Length: 418
Length: 152
Ligand SMILES: Cc1ncc(COP(=O)(O)O)c(C=O)c1O
Image (cartoon, rainbow over all chains, first blue to last red; front, side, top):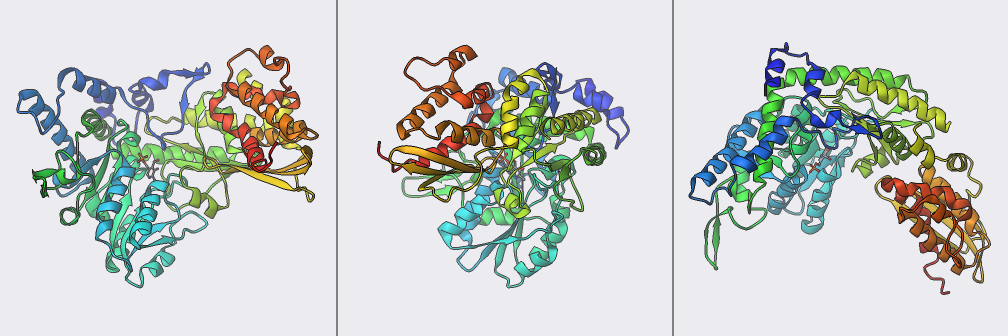
């Protein structure tokens, strides 16, 4: 696409939002007769044409099942699929592409670790999460606790919405924690957690660390080695890629030690009715025909993101978030939830006595899409003393006009109710 | 606000949510039920004073959106003084009105022998806003729970 060229010549750390928007077909749709203002990228991002096209092209020109056929088309598709593994490894700066496991989404990646690593844990050991986890990084550990007797600990957050590092340290003191599983960025508060410090403290206490990067991987460059992570997960659909494809990265030694998650085709090396042996990593963890087309779509999405570059993406989103915080501060009765030290492009808020559902419906009637509710983080809501919030979340295509439309409409909604 | 939103956020609904008439506790209640929506954390609790098979009074405590609050309050008004059987018939009619795509006239003039929606009428606009139907149904979930053990 020649639009890629335009983007390449844009100086680093600035972004031509209009040129970016032009690459997202859906952004020229109208909703209820108004321009579509999409402020729900945190739930799932929209897709650039290159991602859409890459998937259609694959099905048109280059598709067959992988790792099975001895014919040209299958081999080519296998190569393309495996090439994405290499791309993802580079994207995360993982030491090896063999440490990249494709899953259905972040949820499945976390479940994989809870199941496989979890089966090596013993009663008396503990898993430590935080108060601001998405249900995806809570329920799998509760299930592990209930089936294996492993303890589940929860590290508190401060009222500002940061991880309480002192309390976190205390939770590690007795040396029972085998795994710290924490979000790298909260989907409700926008908090970017101090991953390196979390990892260092975990390691010093003899624990492994998993980061849920579902939100974080979208907003800034991720280097799993700099972060000191043992496991890292993200989900394709929030990264401008398709649904149905997620990633687990894990250190090879750990992956080799862990038993498989699902059983079936592709994950074995030899099979008899009496006994089977497992394929090497990562294939040991990829049972059955994977999401081939979606994986290729993810490859296109990563390529696209890398052409724009995280310097530009991060600068754009930081500027936009600061702008939005300023604009929202002018809406009477509006209260932003949390004030974390470092915030990605996610802002949750409440507004006087207007319920988030009413806000979301009325915004929608004006073409503006936001999320309202508990955001799959019910315990966090309880901790914050809220039962629901409205959340605006930003992506690479979000413009200041989008924010202006949000702020202006919120003022009108408030006038309507109060 | 745009037209369709105005339709849903009819002044009667907004006004009702702002100043509910049947909110509060009912010390003489002998039945109660609760509805919860796990997606948004909304909750409504109904207290009912039942005399024989007659609902003499209803009060609700609702923590919810404007639609949910108005729906609870309108339910309380509409069903006060009804028999359990009538209350259930109103519920059936309300549910039907929430799924029909029929014009509003048909919703307003029910077939003979079925109870009218009365004060609850404006809530039927929610049928064009699928995502919000659960909001107005929540008080009915609470009612159902309250009446579980009442045999008619
Ligand atoms: C922080 C966080 N973790 C996990 C998830 C789960 O992602 P998925 O539903 O793609 O598995 C999400 C997305 O909703 C999220 O925001």
